[in-house]
Length: 64
Image: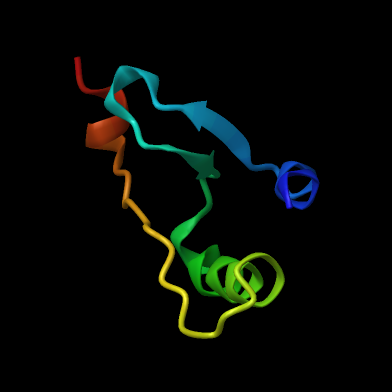
């Protein structure tokens, strides 16, 4: 599955810096539903899967 995720632009986080150890991608809010459908159908292969998401604002991204 990692090759599918990499091809779609996902990156691996090794858990450093307090982040979860996981594959992740940043997408626009409008694309969230499509991305969740992809993950449920192609990666998790379970319609009820609920992958963790985190909403990131400009304030979050650029805070000192």
